[in-house]
Length: 199
Image (cartoon, rainbow, N blue to C red; front, side, top):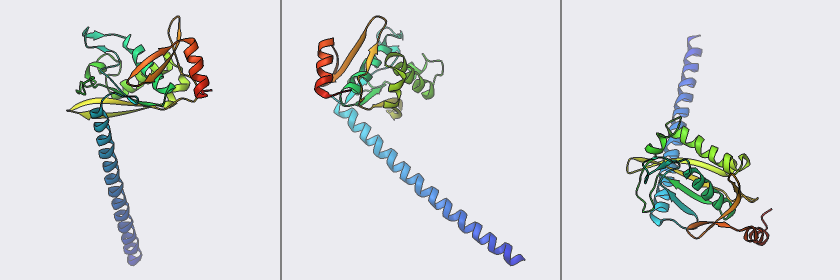
């Protein structure tokens, strides 16, 4: 009987050892992936703004007025729509135009939930409110750290249908061209959609 228990103990120990080694291997792989992503993001920041990358200091905190400014959320919505209507891209929040890390702490302070989770929720609320809930699936949010400050990368996929920014009295089509996001007139929008076969 004791030999059976010994055999079971050996099997359990061996199984635990294999499982532990598997977990260690997975953790090492995840760490390598995280380091690779961090290097990629760092390189993206160093390259500056372009057709696929835009920096924003915040989503709600106005650095010039030193207070909360919800109008900045419209600017975020325009940028996201611009990427969706072109070839997709990255909107990086918490980084100044010159690449300096400003962080998200001041933005966090303007939110109900003053942390990464609250920030992520607010970004999805902005997309849902100004573009439509159906566009939320094209937005993926990641957090990183630079100079000991959190910043957010919003990875935006190209949309197969036009993404319009819905304001109180207007519905506007924005497009990312070069390192700028521009509004198109109705005629320009129709021409662009036809030329690019966006349906």
